[in-house]
Image (cartoon, rainbow, N blue to C red; front, side, top):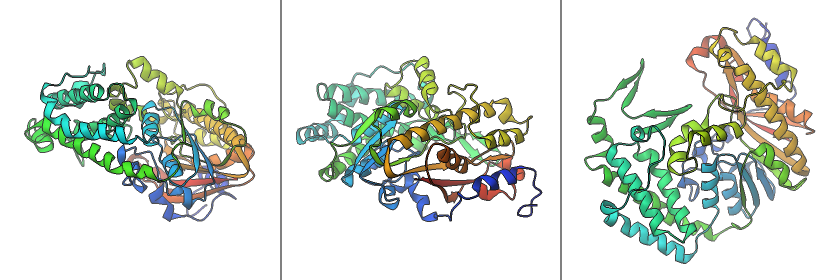
Length: 445
């Protein structure tokens, strides 16, 4: 018996992995390890990237002068580094995220601010006669936008491209504002492992259809083109208000690399960083390219379905569209946990055991490479959440701690910051083990 539970093997494995690495919780970090911790701050607020976290972690975790973030997303840590006079390198395989990060880190000059301000003052007056930018080949393009909204979105994109012709930094600045309002003006929203549609309403039993015509009027009002204009005007005005934030800090010392972190970390220099901090995709099967597909296609970051497949194959093996292989588990406890997953469960049918072996093989690789680029005495912080499949908790945080020790780190500590909710279908099987379902900061030195 452990904690009142019959020990079926799972509890022993979980407790054994936590032994000597689990530390006291720091719930005060919880608001900082997600988008809400910094999403309302100047520059950070330009593009909502729900997988991001707060730049306040730089001071809260005592990060050093030179920082590496190998899963940088839209650049929260890098913007924070610039504002604190530090130097940062960020890597991300997602071209949308890398683009947004680069724009946030690239101040525009006074002449370019004037050009962007002129566009803000003039675009609505010419929208009605603007030429539409070509629609992408995304099959659901007419499903994710109402017809009048789609026309307005494409006309606005055409105006951005023509107004900023020959001014790439102005074009990119205006384009970030455009990308950032697509979900707001769209008939879709991001949820879980993809997108949902606004014409359906969540109820206790699932989803029900909203009356056609009524939900559109409730959401967009009588004039959908005006709705798009209002949303874009507000976002661009917000960004122009934030331009002053570029006046402080060191914005020239930051670097964004678009690429696979497993490959790129090796090229950023050995023993050159005081701190590494990252939040990898969690081992939860979420395909973030799926949830961001509208922005990826409409922004021109992908042009074909083969492009999307290639992006998925380049990413960490945290989802089923990645390049799953036949890797051996880098720790025996991983196979022990996999062996406990109900063989008749959906997880096994969906090749989750293969995914988990590949995921932790990738984590072992990135940890080894991060260890090599850290200066003596440097620290690495990994923000990660645990998951559950077929009645078995996968303690990603303590497994990463063990992998880090194998990678050459001398010390590893798991610092829980908050509990994670358990899916309804998992609750009975995990009853009594809820404490293992957590989000943590793994501290390595």
